[in-house]
Length: 206
Picture 1: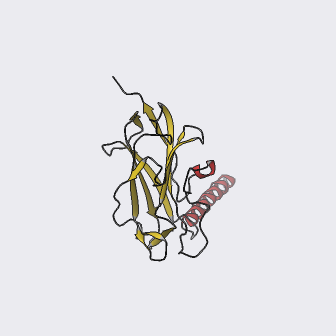
Picture 2 (picture 1 turned 180 degrees about the vertical axis):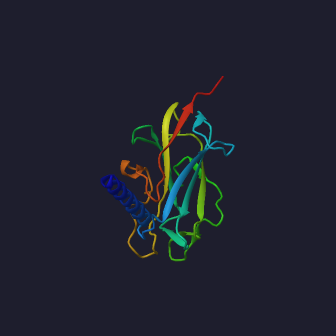
Picture 3 (picture 1 turned 90 degrees about the vertical axis):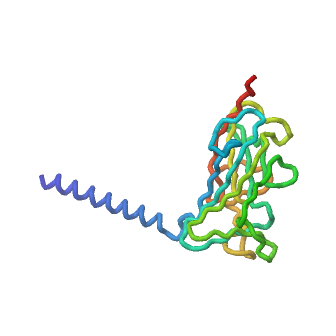
């Protein structure tokens, strides 16, 4: 009987230590400061995963400050975000938009999201626990200007953060979204890049 009590007691202590360890890990200073998410919506601003071929698609890219202090993100151009669609299950990019002139998307109004820092950088200021979002409207065309083919795709987006500690320091190239057509390495989610969201393009009904 004493062995049973010792065994139960040992397991309880081990579980308590594991829980304490997990709590400590989530409050460490090296825990993620930001979380980036992408919401896919239809023309009525409702979350959706299915779209009729040729219909516009709304993409809302949001970054959340997880800390209890103001944080500032710096960008070396006015293109603060990049979004892309790939064939489902592949890294084949069929569309991307970094707000450049050769892309088929438009950026909606986002008051108080970006401002010029006065030193050649653009910045986004986030108050403690604040979320900031940028809304993009995609016209449903691929990078060749054609209607997206009927089938399954995955979309994702990220912020092209140059620096998180201030202009003049080393660029954060490891977890930020790059401008231009993303490579397969850019498809992994980070604090600045969202997870892949599935969408389906369906035929136009007669």
